[in-house]
Amino acid sequence: MGFQQGLSGLNAASKNLDVIGNNIANSSTTGFKASRTEFASMIADALGTSSGTSAGIGVEVSAIAQQFTQGNLTVTGNTLDLAINGDGFFTVTLPDGTTAYTRSGNFKLDSTGNLVTNGSAQVMGYPIDPETGLRTSSEPVALNFPTSQPIAAKQTTEITAAFNLDARATDAAGDATADPVIEATPRSTYGTSINVYDSQGVATSVTLYFQKTATDNTWDVYDSLDDTATAIGQITFDDNGNITGPAATSPDTGFALSLTVNPSSDNPNNLAPFTVTLNLDDVTQYGASFAVSDLSQDGYTVGQLTSINVDTNGMIITSYSNGVTRAEGQVALATFRNSQGLVNLGGNNWVETIASGQPVLGVPTEGAFGTLRAGALEDSNVDLTAELVNMMTAQRAYQANAQTIKTQDQVLSTLVNLR
Image (tube, rainbow, N blue to C red):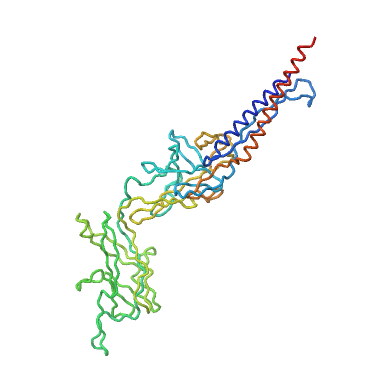
């Protein structure tokens, strides 16, 4: 009698209900990917019989296939929540050292500044040189941020200035023989100042003064109001008001002067004077009032981490209490030739297998990789309505298979009771 067919149908329907139940249970799990049960018929042919005469011996579950379709993105406002819009997986290292992959981007900072998942797996990314913004390694490393200690101070090496010197200015020395008399112009008339930082992060004020000379289109530059001070250099212009000097020492330096800065008395540690380059490329001489449009320098004091933001390309931008904003890393993504070949470890993590192929690593927005959305999470891709309908269908299949066993039992009883 054909009890085997009905029994296989019960087993298959039961597994199908397990898969549907798991999907429904994870309908609110961040980054969860639904699965579906795929069936195959079982046939037994006796040797020598013609094909097509076997009724089959039931059904089997041939695969439980994961469905890696895109889930909806929900905005959370938490800057460490990341969602992938498109292809790719976050790369993480589990506490036991296993490399895993996830679509769940609800990340956090642990007590040591590591970017981690809820399961304490470390999120991997590419290290970035804060000075150049360029990647320093092609191998992903655990992303870490200086939360427990401030970033070190940086001594100023360059001041960048952009200002206009009034072309109508006369010789600062004045001319007592002229009619009317041309009064001398105080050195403080054209001046500006900026704070620079020594190697220990203590600010020192640098003040620059500009005095027109008797030579056309030429200005002396001073760093002191002392009458005995000598000029630290000259700025010259052509007849169109464009800077022509000081002469560039190399193609990379442009028009620049060198300043010697004595550390402030606020720092009593007897630090040696240090040299700062004054970049003058954007200085002009036009017939307008003296005006400074930009004055910046590249040094800073120590600073504590205040915020972290992530761009769509995965670049992690950190801000510090000293006003410094810089790139600290870039989130790494991975893709696979056959995503359905990945094995689910639980905890929203998958690992590679021979069936999935080896991961292809990269960063968001490059090639086939999706973009990152900071402050958002990817919802489960479970369609709850469809799963409830599938559950009713699976229930009917289970009942129908049970009915075939019951009918087979009744037929067997009838045969046994024949007299």
